[in-house]
Image: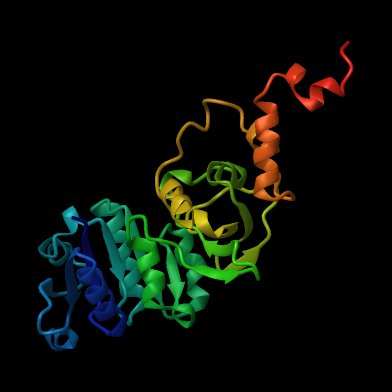
Amino acid sequence: MPHFVIMGAGRVGVMLAHSLEAAGHTVAIIDQDERAFRRLRKDFDGKKVKGVGFDRETLKRADIESAYAFAAVSSGDNSNILASRVARETFKVAHVVARINDPNRAEFFQRLGVPTVAAVRWSTDQVLRRILPEQSMTGDYREASGRLVLAELQLHEDWTGHPLSDIEDAAELRIAYITRFGEGMLPSAETSYQQGDVVHAMMRTQEMNAVARILSAPPAGLDDEPLEPKLQQRSWGKPASTVERLNDVNGKDSSDSGLGRGMGKE
């Protein structure tokens, strides 16, 4: 069962703690002010740790050494960043996110390798997306028929450095745009995924869970075969049924197909 450590028993921290415990996870929440724990439900079974969130001994009392994820959501930007860096660099916590109240600082802190979210865009849901294992995606936009959805991708850290085309090929989707250091950008053919990027992509609605499962795991098999044939087969301009029919034709001997009979042999 994954263990989560939260720094800050304010509104967001308490909502996170309740949501994670309700999902069946173990939770420890840290705050300097013991009175802040009064916001927690009376039946909260998680660990309440009084202390400074970036202090190593305090973090150890919160079982940071066995934590799956750490969320720093106190009211202080500097404390959040410092605690996040200690969790990541000292205790090697794989999933770390920090709340930033000053959006002008976000770019600098993201360059330090700590995923951040500015308070103006902050929500408990955004934190959960970044720290829960294989968290199901929530679509930001659905086209009229409901068959396609635009959603934020949750990528395993091992995708860092891979071209975005690798991600498209692995999950059979189309990346629409990325947000890097707080700025939106349209990716080019040479764009690679960097740590801290927020990636939005269009995909088939019925495949959202499969996409989340594929991309929450490390890249697999990308070097076993060339990518180009797969990219050619993914004809995004054609409906899925047409792509399937083309694949069926390609799988048959050309002499037995209509395509083969219509083509001259050299």
